[in-house]
View 1: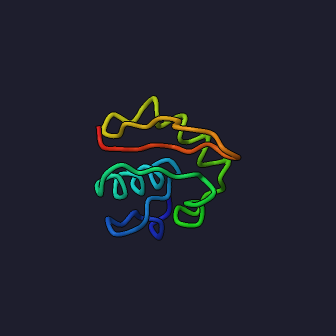
View 2 (view 1 turned 90 degrees about the vertical axis):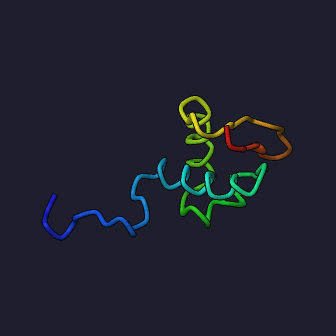
Length: 83
């Protein structure tokens, strides 16, 4: 890592998984969150396919969020709430 790439506490998380998890945590603080990947893709700067893959991973590893595949109608709907 060069001296110009030092991380800042105010910078957006560079890791895709961390960026998605941060977004979900913020939205789930307001209560249950239901969404389809294609509708949050721009918010987290990820493709719907990337979000889907990360959601499966997070559903198994995130201890502070309760994540489940909720339904499927033309795309998976995810349900997220604080654990």
